[in-house]
Structure formats: structure tokens, C-alpha cells
Amino acid sequence: KLRMGDRLVRVNGHELTGATHRDAVQLLLQPGPTLTLSVRHDPLPPGFQDLTIVKQEGEKLGMHIKGGLNGQRGNPNDPNDEGVFISKINSGGAARRDGRLKVGMRLLEVNGISLLGATHNEAVNALRSATNAPLHLVVCHGYTRPEKYTTGSESGTADTGGSLSHSTSSLIDEPLPQHQQEQQYQQDLVEFEHEKQVAELRGKSTPEKVLDIVHAVESMALEPAPPTSPEPQHKTTTVVMSKHTLQPQSSSSPAPPSSLAVFSRQSQPTPPPA
Image (cartoon, rainbow, N blue to C red; front, side, top):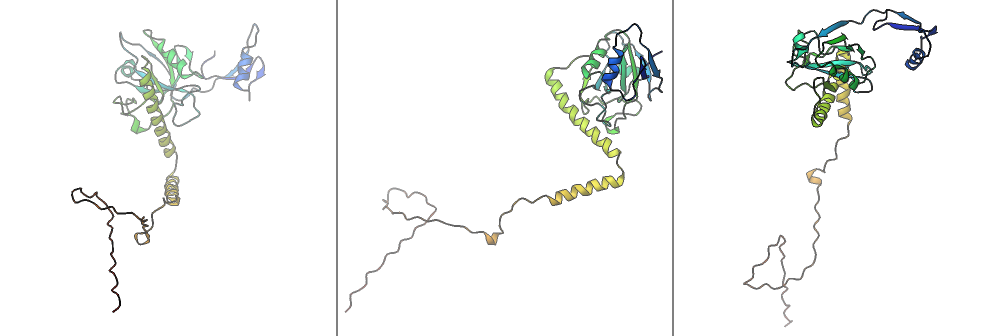
């Protein structure tokens, strides 16, 4: 009777309109022999699919995920979206061979475990727990990945040549070493920012884009110029000379180099009057 996506209207007669998540959970956890729920079957989300993927012997799933509760957001089009998304499908693996999973899909359920409100680690553990058994996934449309980050419209998979990162994603088949995780995290942040900027630009009209460029040029023109030195004709040089006593130099010892030439003037004696 209950299915994913149903909207709870009342719990034991208590109206849930305007209730917080915490209020709803407390009502559901109330002790008692029976639990009476009033639900409304809302339409399924776009792209809703219930899939079963069977891995061959020794085959890996070959899929990365990103997003999750209290973690780096996985949807570049919505920074408040805390869902779990497929971020990459490797060139080899069960996911690529099956062909139905696409980059940008939202993961709703894994082997009966709901990923709605799940953290990133919880989603990873749920997927890794299905090692050899068939993998049952419930997915729907998540976001459309910008074309420059994909390698073909028919596959919807990310390039595996290293130019793409995983937007804070995790490889489901095996964990990475710590240093590779740190490198991947830095790359993830860069790609996520690129995707977010592309999404923002796609949502703007042409006049808005032109205004952004004009504002950028104006801000550059209004920036104070760095201080420059006076023009050549205004430059002055001050030379401070001090009095030195010259010592006679012997002809055998070379005179030390000096950048200052000193001239002496001898006065002639005045002849006595005749």
C-alpha cells in the first residue's frame, strides 16, 4: 500500500501540514499497537526506474556517486539539494555494460535501503554491501550534466581520461588511498564550481550576460592604479660627499679602485711687492 514518494497527510489523526521533519518522526515513533496513516499517492518523479543489475564473476560495478546529507552538494543546479547522484560511469564495469544508468541520475533506493536523507558514507556503504548479489536500484532524473563534461549523448557517461573529476564522489568498488582521496577532493571542488557556473550562465538571458561583462569592465576601470615613479625630468639625485684625508700612496702598491675621483688644487705663493 505504501510506496516511495507517497506524501504523509496524517499520522494517528494528527495533521502533518506545516509540520517539521522532527515532528513527523516523533508522531511515527509514538508507542501503540496500531499506526494509522493517511497518505496521498503523488505522481512518480520524472525518469523513475526500478533497475536490477547483475554483475558477472569478478566484475566491478564501475560507478561513482556524489552528494548526500551534510556533505558536498552533488547537484550543480541546486546548492540546497542533498540527494545522492551518479557522478561517473567507468568505461568498464557492470554499470557501463548494462547501459541504463546515466551520469546525473538521482539514487533513491539501493537493495531496499532508502537513500532519501542519507549521508554520503551511508550511500557508499549501501552500494558496497551488494558485492556478488544482484543490485536493485531505484533511480529518477536528477540533473542534466553540461555537455562539455560528457562524452556522448547516447551513453551519458563521463570520460575516463582523467580530465573529469567526480564532484566529491566515491568509487563504489574499492576505497582510494588517503593521498588520492585528497587529490580527488580538490579536483571535485574545481569541477563542481565549473558546473555551477555553467548552470548559472545557462539560466541567464543574453542582456543579463552583457550586463555582467559591462560590470566586470567597470570594476576593472575603477580599481586604483598602482603608484608610479615621477617622470624622468622630475627625478633628482642627491650626492652626499664627506671630507677624507688622502694618504700618500707608494708607487709599488696599487691604488684601490674607487668610484669617486678627488681633485686637489694647490695655491701659488703671492710675490712680495717691489
